[in-house]
Length: 216
Ligand SMILES: CCCCCCCCCCCC(=O)SCCNC(=O)CCNC(=O)[C@H](O)C(C)(C)COP(=O)(O)OP(=O)(O)OC[C@H]1O[C@@H](n2cnc3c(N)ncnc32)[C@H](O)[C@@H]1OP(=O)(O)O
Image 1 (cartoon, rainbow, N blue to C red):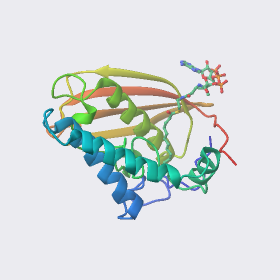
Image 2 (image 1 turned 45 degrees about the vertical axis):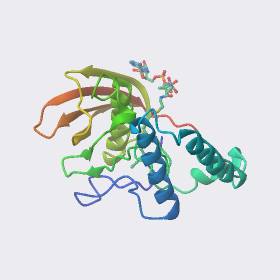
Image 3 (image 1 turned 90 degrees about the vertical axis):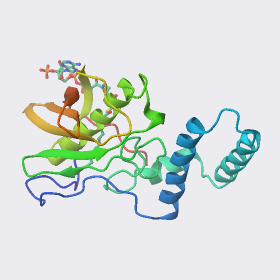
């Protein structure tokens, strides 16, 4: 897999933002609103008398968006156009309402770091983050760490250790760093910590240098 023109720690200043933060565009603001809706649907009173109308209005919004959507094959080409950082992925993508979204910066020691506060849509155990969500976030963090380290690959294995429950509603710091390269095999490690430095989840990933072709 090629890293194309992605910045690396050897050619870019510390603090380089490696993902695509929300930029205030209409699509990013609409996606932010969709995140609020997902969160609010989980929080609103189950007896909220307006929920039937809410369902109608949300379906009407979805119909409007679908009416203005090109064929999926065309949209995929558009999404993967250029060599830039993606705006649609489910971890950092400002255009993806499933993404928190996490913003990652590159550090001079070759690691990447980002802080995010997760809320109810990401819940697994009561008041805590779903383990699959932690693995999703860390898989992507390791992928970005590989790019910052000058490599890229597909995840072949992600070994995840859950040290303690990961809290919702408080800032979590995620880090990742490329550890070693052996031919096509790239080993990368990362973790999720609370603000006071407690490790909640740590991962080691094996990535293999191979890419899936972009849609054209
Ligand atoms: C700035 C923003 C940038 C952009 C940042 C973007 C970040 C995105 C991050 C998301 C990353 C993903 O989720 S990627 C999506 C999830 N991953 C996938 O879908 C991958 C599906 N699997 C595959 O396509 C394949 O199995 C591969 C590519 C992983 C490997 O297939 P291959 O190319 O045929 O290679 P293969 O010969 O099998 O393996 C190569 C070597 O690795 C070893 N190997 C392979 N798998 C394993 C394994 N699980 N455990 C141990 N070793 C393994 C083999 O023994 C071999 O060793 P040796 O004999 O050479 O010693």
